[in-house]
Length: 295
Length: 265
Image 1 (tube, rainbow over the protein chains, first blue to last red):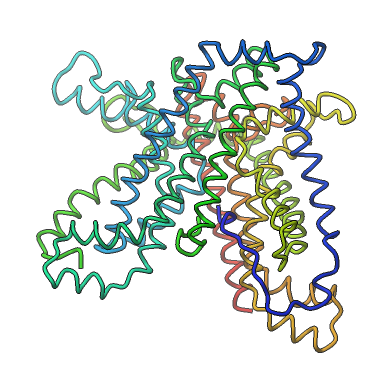
Image 2: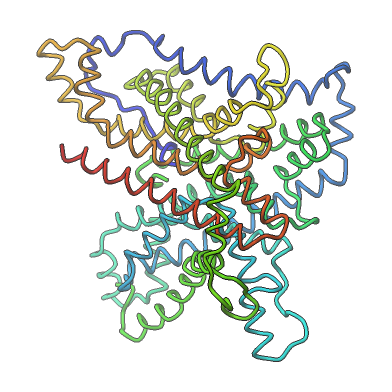
């Protein structure tokens, strides 16, 4: 997501030909209008006025009051909130260690983080099946070690499985801006603080935390957006009682052919995502791309 | 610094390094091991085999790999062309209309992929555009999903291209198109390659929109992996995931080599 911090750069004296009309933007804009905004508008139309029926809010009300939707919204919010909190804590701790207490394998760790960002999210869920699944590595070890009858670890096919997978996958998105923010802290400042007797926790609380607050906010809001929109992880876990909004849209449209309900839920999902995206952009532009760190 | 005493530093490492290995090293290792395992009942695979790979390169799975590579290449190339055009058109414009347009170009990156897929399904199943059930709808979905990232990357790259070179070219009388072709685009090349790499990686792993719109003859790797995992063939799923990951990383590595060579020039 290198995108998001792109700011127009004011050149002191743009050449005259640079001003050659904003008309140049029309072709790509048209492409996007036809391929993205037109389909999006049809979702909204289908939600408000289903095909073959008149405009009515009755259908929307039925969907929004249904137990599936309420539970889907609840799971989406709980999973996104918990996963984002987890990403922030884990990302902060890992970044602190990588930046300030570098260990011998730190460059390898950095490459691993970049690799995780490039790989599809469902990889983690699949790996979790082998590690924490009922016939997986961890249960195999525990059953052998303690001669158990039943596999003792059983959290994967619940919302905890989804939350743990999302924390693992999205923590790198918090670490990138954090590492960028940490690199702007003067090492001398930290040395002075500790030579004056400040313990590590005080240094973290009073120097590092304030300096990295913009990066934490930017990374956190990006995480919220990504976790609200995440589909692959939830689909691969496949637990019947862990249904999020994107999952519900998929189930309604592809499994039940109920496009109208799918559109209503999609509209809610899109509005939620655009709100979170607005928050993210606002944080980036409030603190300036440099401070919040590009993602 | 934070690592005051040696004991404290060792203690931190003793906690964080295993945590890091379990969270990030183990999953990747496990996927690769599973792709090589004949059986896996205890802590480690029982026997190793290359059978899953032989299977993967024989069946529909090979088609899926080719489909994914082609989809990624076509969608990313289109997104690069369109995104670069948009970024150039909005370059150095700071007034409100241009800022709003910039925001408009970023919007697709905020919309959940499943909803993008649903929109395409609804829009292109009715006149004037009947594309449902064609390969084109998958390509369009991938194009829409990677466009904003390409646009963002190229915009960020343009901001870092030094203005002097272009001003010199202008003062020497180079026409705008010539200047674009001979000065701006060459300077921009590393950023264009980075933008392409990012969107290619995104496209290779895309699942949400693809699973909504794909026709029977155009199954991408993630969709195929999900089908395998859903029917319980998790070892085959792990094999395809390994192949997908390796293919993605190979393309990214080659592109980053090309990019650093372009940087040197």
